[in-house]
Image 1 (cartoon, rainbow, N blue to C red):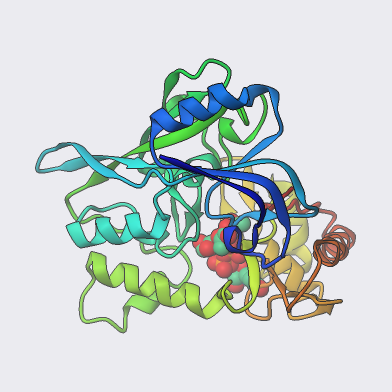
Image 2: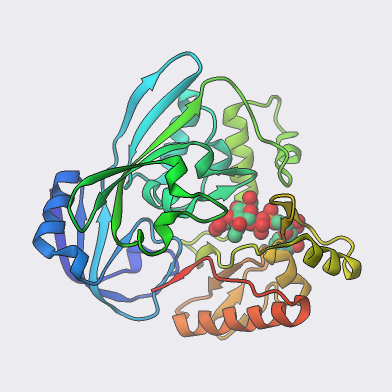
Length: 338
Ligand code: EPU
């Protein structure tokens, strides 16, 4: 089944809290319906945007094209043995509902990604990550529809070219050509935990034992302390990506700031937390108009109430300029401007 809406407010469909309208929107809950929409609309020839939970978008103007949204929400067990389980999950499933399901069943691998906003399809586009885990660690394959032919295509994980917040689905020629309908995950059934990122282990010390439920709870507690609730203050999580730079660039910065945090990426590169740089520039907690840098996590920009996208962009540019001036690094938005 699918449902079509005209001149619809996108307020409930994204997390930044801007009251923008879309000319048209279609929500569907079966692959057959998506195929029908592709054919009827001649989708590959028109302006459209497929959204997930809208937790990574900044609408800068009314959207005059077609918005698509998947309501395919099933979880199917494809195979299972005593070591692992393979789940095929609909792209429209709320990501954290999937994590909650895995934790309840004792399927290991998704728990560090608890409470990340958004939906399953977007998790595979964006390669969402937190606390030392990334979606790619548990993705086995991605099922998509080619909008030029209407045919199903399976992308094994290796073809998705996953890297930090990156996949082939984010850029041309794959972006907007393929619509993800399902993601297939492989999860472990033996307890293996990744606790060495940030203060996960420290947060867990308050619990009597380390198990999957408690890891989920600890991650949720850490996130709730640092990240603003979009129901109260509109935001899109991390507004910027953490820049990946050559080790020499980091060493130059560390001469001046010996405590500068970093994460190893490979032999030659490290990732420097942009939130730390923004804080060093004095922007943490500061506002410009009705947009502000979150006071507990400087990587997040928040809507202080009826903020316009122009105000958010002005703030983002001011922050970016400050970081460029002080550290010589250009931080790039993770949020997509529409
Ligand atoms: N830091 C500061 N000041 C700040 C923020 C961070 O000094 O205002 C420092 C922290 O002290 C720490 C380091 O920067 O040493 C890293 O901070 P944190 O662990 O909070 O993570 P992050 O690098 O700022 C990334 C992800 C988050 C994810 C966390 C936890 C990106 C763009 N963001 O943030 O993802 O939750 O790690 O793994 O990679 C998101 O993508 O929307 C998101 C929230």
